[in-house]
Length: 116
View (tube, helix red, strand yellow):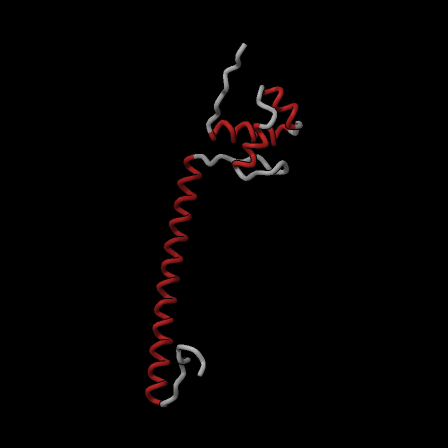
């Protein structure tokens, strides 16, 4: 008598892990009820970076994903503005140092290369 090996998609694995974490049962009991191999849950949890003490993993529904994507785009736009501001600020400091060196005849920048 041969048994046929079942394969699970990532979504099915996450669903089973969530059921296990929410059930409060031991792994052995849960795996026996679901007819899973003795080490499947442990392997899957390691694959997804979860520990035995983890909370159930929530799957993001499309509406939440759209809101999350919008939030990420807003964050990217904010960071781009901040980067542009810092580039301008850096350019202003460079210009200020150039003017100070020219007018005061004092070297402000360090010389590159080894100390002599």
